[in-house]
Image 1 (cartoon, one colour):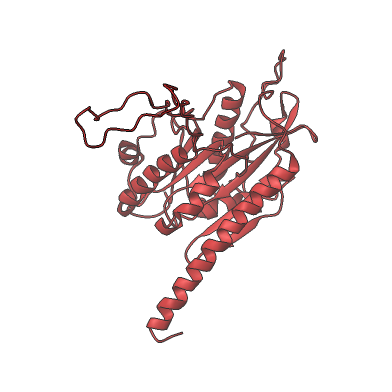
Image 2: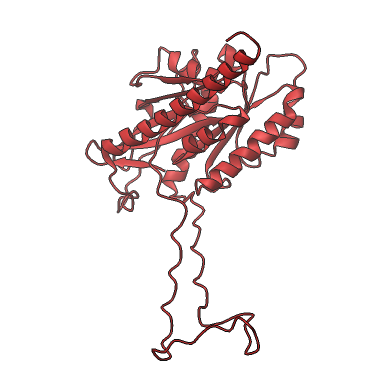
Length: 319
């Protein structure tokens, strides 16, 4: 969710890089961060697992100008792709405004791509985010390798629909900046058009407490009548929605040859009202709390992975 900080007149949006393990998510972020032309960037935070890493940093692309008079800050995240880090992926997706799905173009990775894409849709719904409305960009990575599927073949099973598709070789820096431009552009379009990406679940209706279904006068389980008179029981309140309001976070991408946002244009338009008025001023404390929550979860996941590795090493007689 877009984070509004009126104290410093700033809007923060969150972009998450998602995909199967070792597909190139981390490489994308590292290329963006290493770009010497990219200024106003924060410190990169890295949490390493046995085979993958979760990265985070934010930056303020000056080329974007302002949105409704407010500066734009972009947060970039990656998530670990392995199946057993699903809890971490759910947490990192919380409050996302956009997603870059990094698909591995190798023909042998078709099933892994499909499983990860389905996992993305599931975890978006868990976070009350509509997969059909969130800003989504597909990157077909590793196009520099042999035995890769054609773009047409990949699109036939990935089914990107209206989402942009970018060919890339992230290890060489190709297509990284184009992917980032497309993703941030989609997020800004959603903001400009006031697109609500939440699923908007409604709480279940209260059950009818006056009906005694399945009970007859001849049943052994006939309920006893109250001696206080024929007073109707108070209606049961509906349960609260299982989805809490998420705090915005995350975003990133790369390409050393060019400034990532050369092609992004945002034309300032006069507006009669603040399009962000419904949002609450979460402040820097909310950003810090959200970041600390992510770090805590990642540290716990890393500790579990290390313990698992020690157990395996012990069984192999190497501990």
